[in-house]
Image (tube, rainbow, N blue to C red; front, side, top):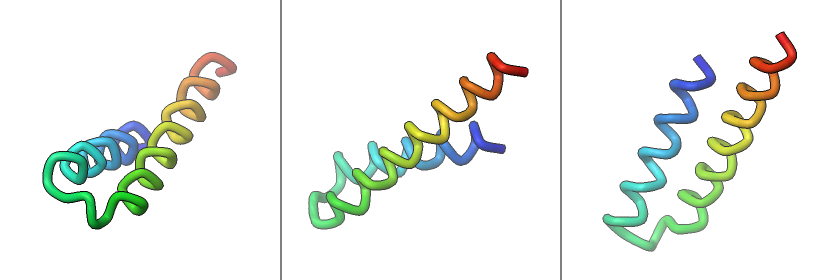
Length: 48
């Protein structure tokens, strides 16, 4: 589930970069969230 959310957020970020810069701040916030989710997933995977 977390991987799916992260992938969706990264895709939205990339679409935001190529389509418009008006929502730049929001799109970059989504990217940060996606990176955090991926890091949490990796950490949980290693500790399990």
